[in-house]
Picture 1 (cartoon, rainbow, N blue to C red):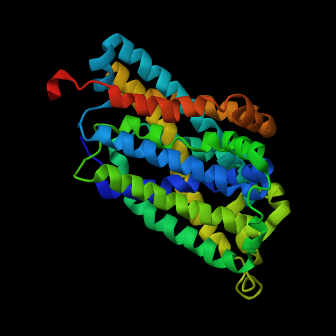
Picture 2: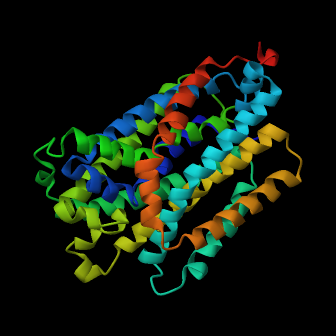
Amino acid sequence: MKKISPRQLFFFLACIAPVGKLVLMPSRLVVEAKNDLLFPALVGFAVQTGVVFCVLLLAKRGESFADMLAATFGKIAAKVLLCVFAAFLLFAAFLPLLEQKLFVQSAFYDTLPSVVTFAPFFLFSAYLCAKPLGSLGRIWDILAPVSIVGFAGIMLLSVGSADYGALLPAGAAGAGGFWRGLAAAASWFFDGALLLPFLGKIDYRRGTAWKGALAYAAGGVAVLFFLATFYGVFAEIALNQPFAFTKTSKYFSGITVLGRIDYLFSYALALVMAFFVALPVQACVDCVKQAFGAPKYLPAALSVLLNLGLFFLALGLDYRFVEIMQVFAQTLFWIFPVFCVAVPLLCLLLRRSHASQ
């Protein structure tokens, strides 16, 4: 079985996972927390940094998530728990998938119907989700420099237009704005839980846990810098600026001479985002595979079935994104702290399997 090296894991945590938070999360935070948008995001990253550290400590055992669950609860209960966790991953995948769909339509193909512009993504996702998680390491090696170049390019074109004084006075939104922002952002912070299906597939070496946490924290600092720049560019009207990373760079003075060179960096981040959006579905397939064994047909059949279902669901909810966002941000936000914080921390109590003892 292919294993993911620490380097590849660090690339994912620092360069790929943060990209998923650059589309709609910034404007949503402004809606709830206004100029205090950095505070809920900071808490989200701080909590997930701790969760990433704890999950990577589990990876030190060299056992799969399924083996540890079976050793603690028995094989039948482990199958049930894995299916419940797989259902959560599928649920967590839906909002990023819809934001990717809206982003591609609005930023690149605003005159074409969504079936034409976004259906190819599900073909790509179905192929990727049929692959084992351990094969992702090489992909992350390739995507990391693409992400770095894309993000650095957008930031270089954006910082000159930002007035960071717009973030003051701190605390203007009050405690209510902070808690609403924290709830609204919860659906974007599932990175630690996303690592649980990778247990047993990581080539753990000395210091991987704390180095992985630092890598994730570094990615978080980059996102916080982007959030500050985003608000510095748009201030009060930032709440009306979805698809944030495609907007901040368009005021760069050199664009009048060079043209929309910022699109090159947006395309780079969009490529990275496509792989990240498919990852929760791929992890869902892997959890089911761990629960019921690995016959050759299962990953491919389940991948096609899930992506086909998500395609028709996304198509049917094409004009309901505002309502869906409200459900994630106001009604069902509590699901994410349960599965993304409580569950990974409780996993530290799981027993080792007899084979490893």
